Length: 357
Image (cartoon, rainbow, N blue to C red; front, side, top):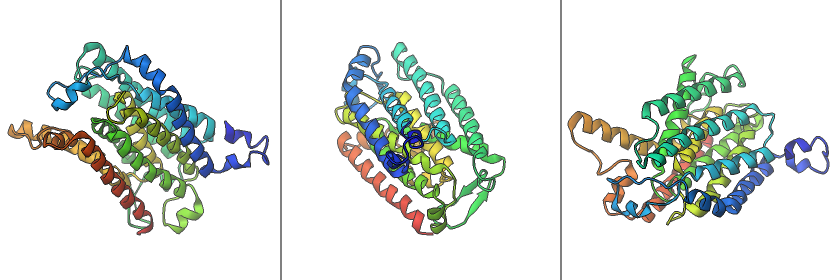
């Protein structure tokens, strides 16, 4: 909204044209919204939506029974409100990202609702149904993103650390983009198993793509750094700023001991958004570095399930990976801090790829 007012009052509101200013404003707006509405929202959901706890999980998690969930609604609401205020609403990438956050959030909401109503952490949407819906949405979004990109980029895959190196995937890129969005959403969902873990690691990853989106959206910076130039992609920085602000605001209430959980409505929405941003910025492979924590969490589950089915033996004490370390004797608070430290280091490595080419 504020961006569009600049045409009416160009001299008075010229500052609102700058992406850097609006990114910071979007972050603070989403953060404040979460702080203001956090307690009332928690009081509302506490009587209605309580997180079912896995009985075979770590014993320390059993005491979390009764903690309200669906905190992702608070994040999504703060992000959307902030985006409406500070983003250029004529930018198609903004609306495509909003569509992913809303649709994946809806899938997560239905999944959470079924689990709560049935009182069982495993009786939500079936895994096949959830994945099929996510992949279908991801493919459609991937196709639509390509329609707004330069022809030479829409089917291309950029390779980190190598300048001017693009792999043309052709029509397979639509399925690839859908896979990136779906896989990121579910990997982020698996990471959301400890107080603050998903929020902290998510913030680190989103900061990387905030910087990347800003750089590739500017022809001068992308040319200097040998990055693909995607006109209009810089505006995604403003939306990412809102996401970071929402996560920071949610973290205020999700810090140990958590007063509310994100739920699938939040983790799927945030993860799907992260994957979408990677597709828009042509940084899908960079996501493997910036989001290596999420990759490791997802791989631990795949390895655990595969090993048990093929060999009848488990590789980890429990999957996802953070539970393996927790059952090894490391406290939840210590694990969260260590995972966050690793995520910051991974973010720095990912950012270094921008210059090291």
